[in-house]
Length: 169
Image (cartoon, rainbow, N blue to C red; front, side, top):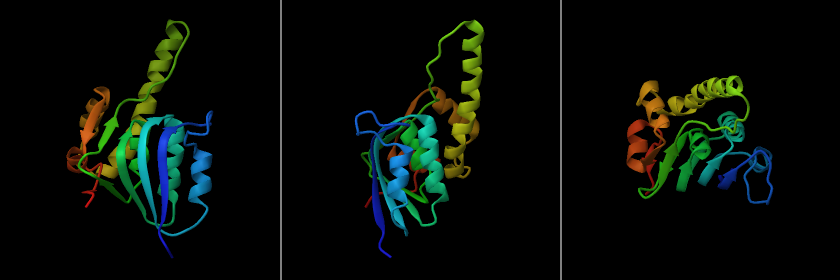
């Protein structure tokens, strides 16, 4: 069976407004259009964290081997998707960005405090993808600090922290 290649380029969104976004449904359609091992090329600034979680879970449940190749950047929500790779490959000139999740909130003080509390829960859940991939190479506390600071990572740092496995040849 021949290996397939999928491309995740652009913003990750629940719905595509201009036919240039990656949505969970579009990705699922492409993912399920065949079988066997796949390579997913990622070049994305990120996007919706829930849509990214759906795509991450699809890849984690996929029966074949999943290789992720970062082709430019895997930032924000795209970095979460990258963590689903059995093998994550980064050329030395590529980047990954990790940060806490964002939401838009309006309302009174009580509603804004609740939104902040909700984000604490959302961020803790989001860290799980990085921690699962890192397999102990980074602590949850260190990762939380890096996400608090919105951290850009080189390929070398990603390999050091266990967020990537190897350099591209």
